[in-house]
Image 1: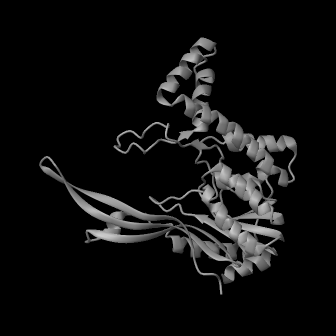
Image 2 (image 1 turned 90 degrees about the horizontal axis):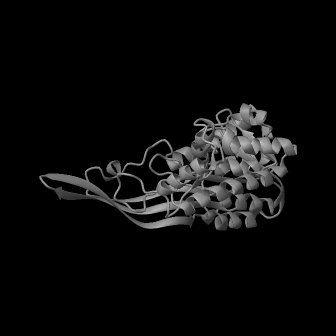
Image 3 (image 1 turned 60 degrees about the vertical axis):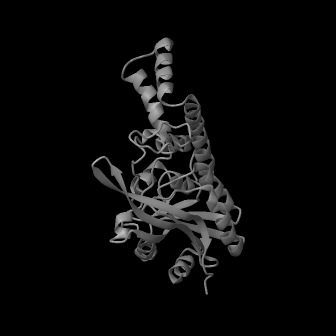
Length: 330
């Protein structure tokens, strides 16, 4: 926690740290279950002039991101986001709600076009798991329809109706409706959040258009210079602040093993069964210590006979998954 206190002194603020793991095969997303632990940290911090949110994430639920920004702003007059590295999708949406965004040399934001996930989504081909669904990208659906109009020059209503009917054979109509609703919603949320930055109304609309559609694919990355050119309120850290941000990130990267792909076979080794406890996200503050999102359980090897061949299967028996409170800071 020493570096957290140093960062607070440097920024003259109170610090919250929120990191979701993007460890290969163990990715974790922003979800509404963060609101309860965040409230506990904020209650300990109390009403203050300024809060800094140190944020590393690949994204998640947009409404959870929107609610988090409004929750934090209820406790402070000035809110800033510190981006050490990746801050994509719903993470970028959170950043839009800050008065300023501190970005390191390697920091990246990303498009905020959401993907719809639900039980009516198409199943993933080649899997026997009925719960394995393909996320439906809002912008990909829109791009498909735009391609029909712009590239194929299809403009008459009857032909466009046929294309939409054909699309609904592959993607459930209710999911398509959710896609349209999600696009409208994300644009509205982004414009509302940008009110905290000194940006003209026209520039706000151009920023939202770029982040929602004009940036291309969802994995497009926006570095510090481009983010500033877009019109966002971006601050470049000096070398002392950069070193502190990097030191905090290195500690978290090691703690969550972000560079090490999760492989059950490595966990098992020569054993037939092994227990695991995996740290997948953290919420921390100097005032209230650590909340950690954990997955706990065991993996085991099972041999299945398929005709003349034997196949080794890995079974995951998960016994706990959720947030857990750790010790208060001393």
